[in-house]
Length: 136
Image 1: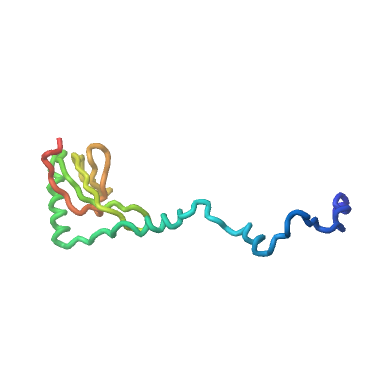
Image 2: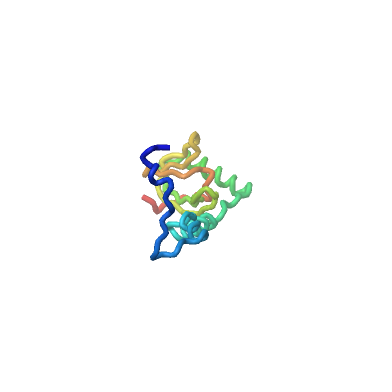
C-alpha cells in the first residue's frame, strides 16, 4: 500500500448525524437504468407497427404493368401518374403514394423509373402507372 493513505486505512466510515443511512434498495435504485426520454421506446415500436405491407400483384396486373413500361420506353417524356409503395423502415411496412411528373426514362439496369426532376421510383414498388396528359 501507498504510504500517503496509511493514515486513513484504520479510520471508521463517516456516519451523518443529520441524514439516516440509505437502505440497500434505495442505493440500488441510484444505479438502475432510466429512460431519459419517457415514452420514446413505446413511440418507436408503435411507429414500426404502423403502416401496411406491400400488396402482391396478380399475373394480370404484372402483365399490364409490363405492357405499360414497354409503351413508356417508346415515348418522349410522357406525363405519368405512378402509384407506388414507399417503405417507412426496417419492418418492410409503409404506405402507398401517388407521384405525378414527366418521365425521363425507364432505367432497366437500375430497375427504376426516372423523372425529369431527378427523382426515381424502384420498378418493384410500382403498383400502377397511368398516362396523365395534364402534366406539362
